[in-house]
Length: 340
Image 1 (cartoon, rainbow, N blue to C red):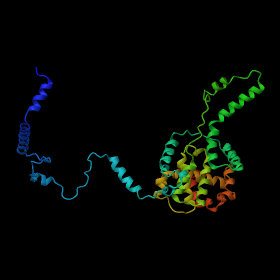
Image 2 (image 1 turned 90 degrees about the vertical axis):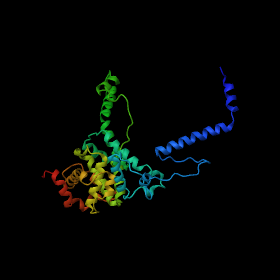
Image 3 (image 1 turned 45 degrees about the horizontal axis):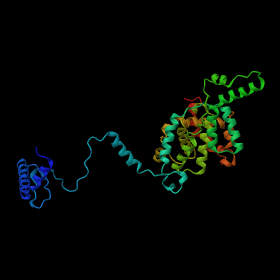
Image 4 (image 1 turned 90 degrees about the horizontal axis):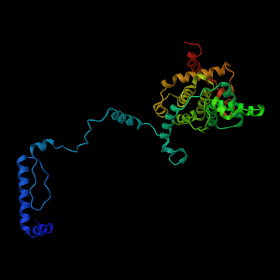
């Protein structure tokens, strides 16, 4: 039995010419076999081979004439093709956030993703019905304290969501003052069906003001149009029939209606792109807003705190402009005011 060491000695002891002859003969056999089968093989760079393969007729037919583009994938899905056309259309729309790159507070690099997230969030947001009397009172307090607009929109759903908690807490405090044996707090938790065992400070959420600012920016609206849109949008807070509309839709309807009232052009493609709605999609909401304007102007409602608020110089007395009594408002509100 031969050991591995002896095998290595025998191989190394063979003359180098013998190894070279065997390799050369093997290469010649492979080249001859490839020539018989007529398979185009790219030659390797060697010192012994100087001839180049001549192109056959089939190769000339398959060879592209001129620069060949990248072949299209036949399995491309239909949605990818639609997305390509969408990107081509959106390429022509002006980027309203392009000039905000030097302001880090505006987050121009992420603003589109932020608004997309807000639109997803408003779908999951629970709709809390609120009473117009409470809203009208909160508007008066909000005006006297000169708070931000965002504070009002955050306060209203929170006050409705925690109204039961306020009542049950007041009952607990009163019982501790008057009752000799006041109920335990566990009893109040049981009465509320364990709804308030843990307090979560979830106050964040998409507000109509967020979407209205983007709509006004896409329109390049002036102060008058933006203030009028804020007034129309705030009137939706006292309308029980409008509580199920998403904030983005209410803001878009207010922006579109303010543009229509002031006669500042039509709803264009850029506004549709940034708001996500066409004029026909917000027509129903615009009718409700026009109904609220008509009720306030003709004293058909006792909730006039919002009108008085926007009648001040701070808001350009926008609730007193004559365009709010125009025929366009009456025509829009007519189907909801007992008309057909």
